[in-house]
Length: 445
Image (cartoon, rainbow, N blue to C red; front, side, top):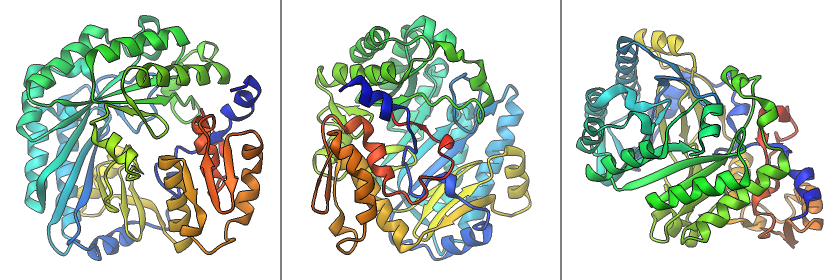
């Protein structure tokens, strides 16, 4: 890959496409009344996925781009838990029966901040309003610094069978720069405690593009991660947006790698994991060959939702908690991000949904094209719309084809091996909102 191509394309801001349209296009014109109606019309004969958002951490990492804040008092966390439970009961009143849950994912923040008893309490409430399918996947995001034996055993007791550990980077200088000091021994201990409790499906989350990272330091982190043998690894490019996330202003911009260095780091990550037996999955995931995500990738059954790449093919995802997003057959709906406003709304017996998007047939077709490209690196446009429907989009893609990043053959768009790191750029050609305020998005690589 030439430096010229990396410079030209690597820094172009494009969405991560965990949905289409992206949350940037959500509007207050779609709100709680739409949410109520969409829940009421939901077909409960089909199983769904559920997401539970806990927007608190004990301390805030400098790089974090999530909707989260620091909670130092347990009573603050307890009040939020009570609101989360009340929201589950409130939303269930608008359903025509009990949900059938096939996937459950806790995110944050640090959801384990609820503690084993708090997590169990939420599960008890959810169990009153939902039926869990046999063998359902129950996943949680964890900060290794706060995993102890009591938590690990508590997670196993409520049926957690997959855990994602936020590792980010194992270089001491980088950890200080991003405000998250957790030596290898901390991660190793957390993984050991989870496995001892019977939670053996472990994901590690890493990042590149962080301050003071180099290709050499990234390779060193990968080597240490490989020794711990996680089933799955996700490695995301750091998105530096200090105008939107105040804590990112604590990061020294002069220490951030440029576009070419970021690209080399991402390639080094891929080389380390694929060279040691892991399978490349989509844009930024790696898994053991027997991992369900790897199997989904091989069979063309890979999908993408707000948690990233997944083998979850359910079209409905119901989110609970401040800032949580639900994906329903008729559109997307998001809860208010401000925790105080969220809690007041629930206490007053009102859904906290304040913005969303009502899907059109064109949105669904474009969303399917974008997801297919992001997952399979190839799409036949004629299977999504009448022939010639995307002539303008194909014209936009020609520069990428001329530079060898994609091939265009009739109605088929295929991303080349060299073009895979830039697949989001190819996908963006089908995004009718892509020209709007590109500063909202992260670099392509």
